[in-house]
Length: 247
Ligand code: NAD
Image (cartoon, rainbow, N blue to C red; front, side, top):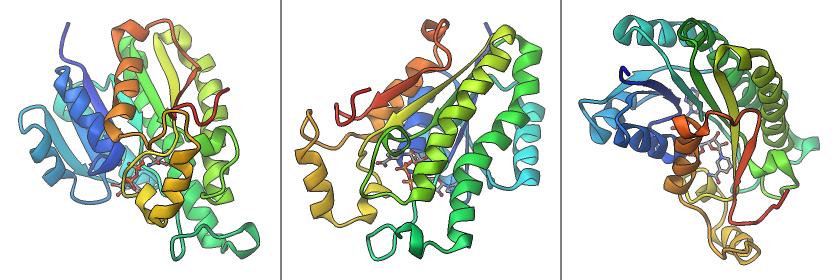
């Protein structure tokens, strides 16, 4: 079998970076896409297996250019991990609904949800042609249950990803393409560090496994879902949250 080619969005840091590292470690070619610093991140992970591309997942033309570039360079696109996301805070706190400006609402939906749609739509013809594909979309515990630290726009976008993924899984299953979600709980990255440390300590105290998760632990779940071993899993959501929310 030829080498699998993966695209990971938001891969310059945090969970996306860990996913890229993990997929390269199992021998995939990984295209690491991010708004900026993608090439630098890729050279740090693995110069031979990783390439960085600056791209904005909320911009249709940028997404088309990204996917066309991957297919032109490698001739295939097997794995897509939609990880790019934002969770705006103001002075370490979310904006309540009544205080949320429309541009902020729109940008969260554009990047988190529409970005996922645009990336899937661009990648699917290539997976369909190959008769094989793996898509993993990053949702969140905030899209599965309640959250006191994230804004309503973020929760709406992450819940939207769950519904979007179920419909897509149904549409493309017959073409050998699986579509699954990973819903992280509180993971120690820059995104989680945007709130005061005491807030994360309070959350950790309520997590059965008694700590925040790591980006590498989320990457392990993603790595499983894109593997051959996950061939009969589609439309599922893996909660990687230390037991904080149990479905
Ligand atoms: P992060 O902020 O550390 O990294 C996100 C990356 O996405 C950044 O490198 C950023 O530049 C990139 N990005 C933002 N907008 C982009 C765009 N328009 N186009 C391309 N790239 C863009 O976040 P993280 O903690 O690593 O989170 C990764 C994913 O996991 C996100 O979807 C997030 O919502 C989700 N998640 C994180 C946590 C957590 O606690 N950290 C919990 C649940 C879900």
